[in-house]
Length: 111
Ligand SMILES: [Zn+2]
Image (cartoon, rainbow, N blue to C red; front, side, top):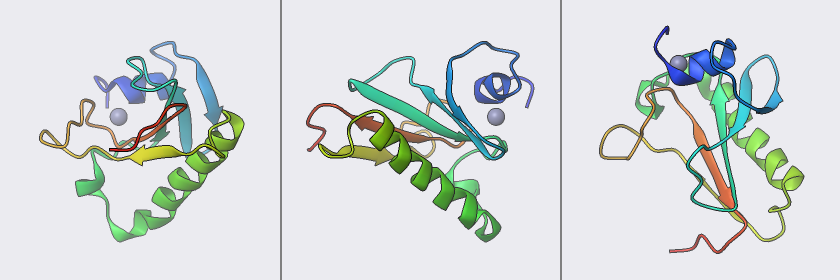
């Protein structure tokens, strides 16, 4: 997707600090952090949102969550806890229409 910010980060058209990368996904910092640790786990495939997932992508979604778990350890919030959030569509507050998982921690995120 030519005009997708995340696709352009993945293909290096837009420069960004990529914290982790493998064949399926990347991890970057949220540019408008809502917590001391606020990371985004983003699949390389342009999937619009959770609403656009199909069952064949179950493994990819599982991998996103397990990568978030590893990032929680790496960024020191595993013991204190963190929040994992998928915003979906307009009313879900999804700003960029490319699937991503928010990891937020480093302060009390309880509600
Ligand atoms: Zn995209």
